Length: 309
Length: 325
Image (cartoon, one colour):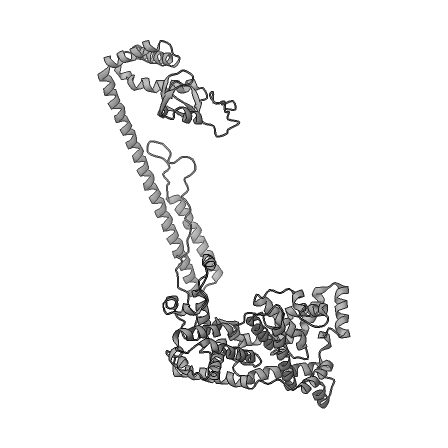
């Protein structure tokens, strides 16, 4: 990985840790910024082999050897047409020959041997087997749908299991509360020694728990034998207890012990402001307004007037 | 807001007899503590009586007013009002014989400057004091914490100055009184005198402010009675109006009774005080100096200071008592 470098701008992974190498169908790498630069118009030629490339076909290099990338690309394309199955051949020998042919085509295209010739062969094959190709394509589609159905079913089962678990949990919780209440009742009304009562209850509880543990045969696999969920994530997610919701209560205004001061709206509308110094621009910018000291003076004047010793 | 303040809860008293009772109690406390060895008759001659203390404090309140008036840089009115409050509150629960009013006066003004955000340094502050300035700054800083403790840390003071502004704004807006600004000189004069009375320990600042406004109006041959009855108290019951009228009448009569104490008498009292004051709190006394030296030598501040605190506990528990009720 250390010697990963863009052949065009010579940037290495060492100098630019976020370097991303991209590959197109020809198998020549370029770094992301070079791709941005060269394929500004959406298409251009590969700086190595001058093949016409589209920008959209660039993808992040997965394999260290770019030739592998190229081969994967070509194989994907070829297999789209060469989609015959074993059932389509009379003998195993024919099928093996057919596979051999596919490999030859892929190898030739990857290593640029007889490209024109090989492409012609593909065209020929396509023409000859048009019907079969179409049929197999549809078949593949059907298989995909079937696979999806299976997955869907698995999901449903999972959901059912989860619901069952949460129901059990709820029940256990309720049971616990009931037991606690019974214990308290017993302690309140029975005449026996409190210690004894506590002991018997603890015993009962332990017994019940054992029963419960044996009573629930946990289903851990599908009928097919496949385990549910990967790994040990079988435990249900712990539920965090939340307290009662916060309820807003407006602050109680303390008794001013005097007549009510005018509201801010009244101060503005009834001409109180004519008799205080108006705020200047600087003060206004700082958030000061003449109504504030005016209101404060009025409140101070009126608060406490009813004070009686 | 005054109605929810510590000022109303702990420092506004029902009537003058309650104040007199408190002052008398601490006078007697001091005498019984320090005069156990003196017989009954001598005691009367040696210690200050509650009346003498009262007279002395009146004199010092005048000093306080003068000091603030001449203070440079000029002091906002709120600082003066707050200093007066502190001074009065301190001597409700302490005797002048225990702490000399001269020292507490300066400390009150200094603390008031801080609380009212009138920024002066201790150096700037003592520049206004005649005599030994280093000693003065020592005394002030030593007493500052004591003062706060005796005030039970109730440092916020509601002064009548802002309510006066509120009333003037209200009168200008809602009344047809011609040129209300001419009331101002009368109001200022009245408020200056109010602080020489106990009114601020008995009434709400807004009541004092209203009394000042009404007094100034009557001096200008104006009548604001209709403003009070028809605007301020329109929605309140007649009982509340009666309470207010009584309060205003009382405040005005208190102000009318203000007079400066006779100089001769004060001089005699001061001489008496020099002999009977608590020498442990006198920075000029041998006891005080020795203790300070010990404090420095031992370098054992917490121990010594805890001793000192125990001297004051009588005052502290009494300060706390109104909060218990």
